[in-house]
Length: 288
Length: 298
Image (spheres, each protein chain N blue to C red):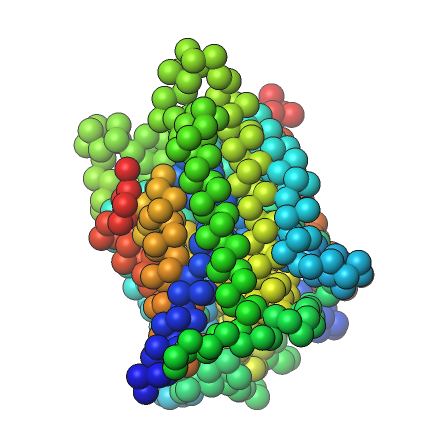
């Protein structure tokens, strides 16, 4: 029993690391830019299928493929922000219609994938991913460990950028005080455009991690909407460290629930946590 | 209109029209219900499918456990979803805007997880709920269901219309435009939000209540469907969210187009059309079809 719990906890931490990679894009968009991008999981699914295609057709490594596709996602994200800015942000109309807009984008991503790939599960068949790594009673496959490590690297890189570069600080400042930013000769719209591009680019990598962990089908993205919002809100808006910690906590909670009560209950963990978080402490664990 | 509907159930021979008509009318009810909270008060509900499913499952349980007749099923389904609506209303007291939208989504997933794991209603496998064999006054049961949905649709439009022209509706509009200002001006925002959320929930539940009879085999994936969640938002947004006519027009146009597209093209492609229309309308015609028509007529 103790071994089982130890295994479940470690598996949960690894899963949480992956969740963190999925969430970081939303954490940037929602936490720093005030853009409620509910379409983020849709971009992750696009990334997952792109990585699957590159691996299947061109024999690339999925994570390498996800990294190579990231610039394309960046451009798409920047373009999407332009549309969003011109249509909603500039009009000061970001509530109802902005939400409906991203809802529509999410929906489109799913339908496009359905049309291209059908509703079947697509998975990778790479033997090296099944290598087991054993430490004491705990034993985990490489396909879980690798995404965890990539996610930590992604976080470290982003955290460094936000703390130590002028541009990173400009992103953090843009929703708090755009006027001050303008006085420092940085165009807020331009800053947000690039930042949103970065946020979407992370979805390409997250998608590659998703396909590394398990087979995917187009409608899976929906399960992640609640999960990633739960993580962002629980971790606190505008805190990457909070996002990482909340993701790990949620991963462990889901994994333990799946082990103790069965996997069909684990979606309720994320959404239940989100409901409670929203009502009790909307500013999150490490909110600004 | 109801007489015309009844006459149609006698006159038209092809049963398919009643299946298609049932679905379109169901969307009239759902879109109208969504609009009471979303369009009038500005609180976006992403979890419509959850309310719809609560109505459907409550009705199924009432039917199987107590042998309740259809009107009782609708009443029960509506009340149960109304209670969930009230709960959502309490959420809306504390959380606003985006957070509320996400919370409703979370609510729907929690409800679905419970249903998925509930053996009495068959879990993910679903459960059979067969409608009675005889339909008094109608030649078969689907026609009775069609007429029932027509009554619900007309009823919900009447409710929405009277809400819109009442103090209640003006209060909700004030909340939508500026909640703080409304509160300072003495609008009882808390009570109005609770009332709107409950009313919206009741109507969504009522829309779902005849669904078990309609499909015979009730299962979570088709009851908590994305189509319901998306259409409930897309239809009022495309029709025009500020008046009662918007959701009705949106539901008739979009619902009708979907029925035609499902038959003639494919069901996936018809969802693509809905997505594109939704995005197109929120960008280029934020006031919807009603707003476009007003601009043209002016």
